[in-house]
Image (cartoon, helix red, strand yellow):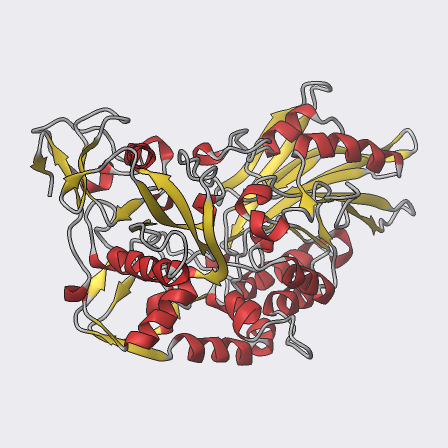
Length: 552
């Protein structure tokens, strides 16, 4: 059995909305639901005939996981046991691969989580930067008894994402390196076979498609699970993660052997459980896989396991109380429902907080007189701040990622190219043609978080023009932007490290950086101000146009 991309979900609960989780497909989430499915499979198959593994991204994603990394951290002296470790231990996981988000809170938090788990965290391609030896266990070996007096030896090889070196550069640079999945699988799979493994499973925090997402400039392929199956002989099946997609059963033919390798990915957040079935025969003195199949079980078909919900009920209540703390008031209701195509006050709020934070950090220094611009994205189209009281969950919902803030130095010409790259997000739409917002965005598969708007400038995005020629009337303080002018750019660490492959930013001079999550900075800002009034900061600085005419 396999899960992946649990992202801190134990309960079927949405901490940002403070209610039971639901989406348009009526999916459920959480390890409490997974536990019920696992119990049923073990009852049917026999506990001794099953293994339970995970493909990574476990300790980041919800306010539950944030709370035990930052508010009541597991790294504190006599600190708590992480709820994900408690739940996975109780359910009885046998092994889990590392995901890229395991590194978001730094290596000490990850090491403490590893210490608290009763199962190994695997990462054959997570290497110590100095020795180039595995920094985590590369594999685990499991012995399953049979009625025939001949045990089956099952090896699980864990592989993680090479993008960690880029996306969490601040946490891992100089400490760990992350070579490609194919390279390390080719090294380890023959060793596992020589050690007597009858069945070789790979748990890979890497999508199946053989691509790198959204232009990220990685030295290795990000989504390499399919390539591993195709190019490395000796693998029976791969539990796929990272891409947040559902693959019930997918076969890839190995180029060397012609053997069909089975792949499955159980969506995300505990919404599905992959069930691999292997039929084995005894031949030539060892067991061999004769047939493999897989399917996914839907967690919305079962109730939560009360053993898990009872065990972690206190932790859940603490986090619910934490996220419902009132930190300020808003003079009006605001939402991001249309922020993907309109300049909305909530995105302006993010940019205002980032701008003021960078201005304060650079005050009195060499770059204090330069204008500060800021980038932000519509990270969630469902974020909102009500009129009246603002809670932590309202503010945190604006910024669901663990990004931190930096200041980089860019020229006017570089900013123009940056904005042109960002504007590829829109589908080219001729003047006069009908505009459907539901079909206007995400061109070329670009996600919302890779469309940046920039505050401190005014500009138009002409969606009738081809990509690369859409930014018009780019101005600063009412005058056309001087290509040679210098600007301080407040930017998140994901973008600054090259995430999304925006031009110029990764190589730009770093003027300042901190380790505080932008989400926390927003919460602190709201607490300090007390009242949020969009009349004080909201303005329409950018808009979509066609031949000079506004689209909206």
